[in-house]
Length: 553
Ligand SMILES: [Zn+2]
Image 1 (tube, rainbow, N blue to C red):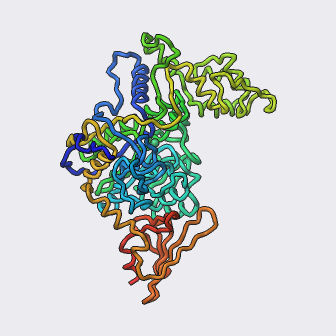
Image 2: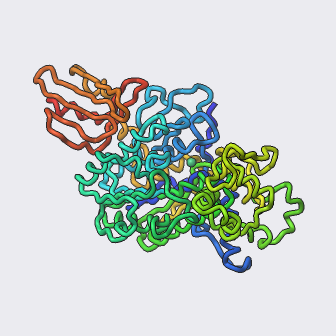
Image 3: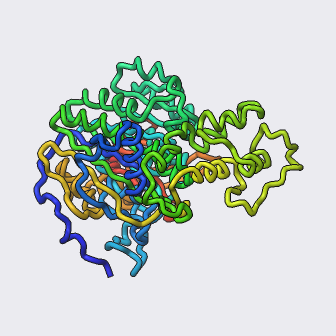
């Protein structure tokens, strides 16, 4: 049975519309990670007595329940989908309606919509209100959270078809990772629509004065903030500032997604150097957005994780009486970490073997013990090891053992911290909510992810109107083209998507629609639609604008 929580939340009934929305998602971030990052910031300030706070602190206002449609512990795909659509869905579903799961459904599910795309507030804002759209993130742009805001499919693993949709979904500014996924055709499409495209070119991004820009860094993800070469990759704060500068020129307003993508990755990896530092880099970006919003007076900033991760704990059983230990004792060693485990792995793999010990001392503040040293030089993926690969023998009984070098480094680093982890996966506790609203109309107390989505919709006067909009832009092709000749052509080739061809038998007019694109052809002449056309193989269905049959009259 569904539990009626909706009556408990303290949500403003009437929300005054605002021009701009900035949604800031710190992926996979438990409260304990935020608290630890804050203590690290306090420690770095030099005095625990200083009133040091995070940028989000003045605006913290409640807890948010994060969940899938059929499971309490959320996956990134349905959780941010929910914030931007207002509907729960299943693990791996990117802004797509779930199939019915009977008693496991946490809120009612409309089974007639299974696998159909859910329109997002971004799509509604752009198509109905002329809003500009932007996204900044540090993962690849087809990873779950940016994909949630720009694409639709029931499988987050189908990254290329998600990537192709994002390209065709009308974004003004995209800054993040994912060069590998931007095909030459996609790049040509963006350029032909007046978008400047930069690949691994920080200076060009900084000099760009246009309003439409894609700037990608790295093949897949960008580097963790502390591993980042500042001459090659921008900080999330700079990316946020750059996006706001461009988007705020639009007289109709804008929606910006900012994702601290790799707070989640550090938590998955149980990386004690990555987790607090990556969150602090996200909080710097929050500072940029909050500064803008307070100056602008017509912008709401919502800061929220999409779910918890890793059971991260500040305090660990084997440390004994740690509650008597000082901030310096507990976080001094953490402050010395200048590389994540991934960053350290890359560093020692690229430097000669005789620098191994000094690199650990210089970048992590650690004098390697014989046990730590032995595990590293016997690791299969340590490329500089003096031991021939077939002779390497790791002590698998060591608590520091992992089959990967980065795993060993992670465990070595953790040893010098008061941190612990219960899992390498997501966790089901509620997450924090921080909201800045110029009219001070904020959700307070305990809010569900669905309710938070409704709050966002109210900001643009879209609450109660999203399903109608979904029906307009994502109708089934079998409902749109009744009485027409329909052919679906599928290719065996990889990453070549299905094509829908429809002919009006009365006048011979023909329309061709390409899956995961906004390009159609009417009697051979190319046109661009305001929304993407999607396709689902499970029911062999195209989803496209309801009024498309008009083009064949
Ligand atoms: Zn996530």
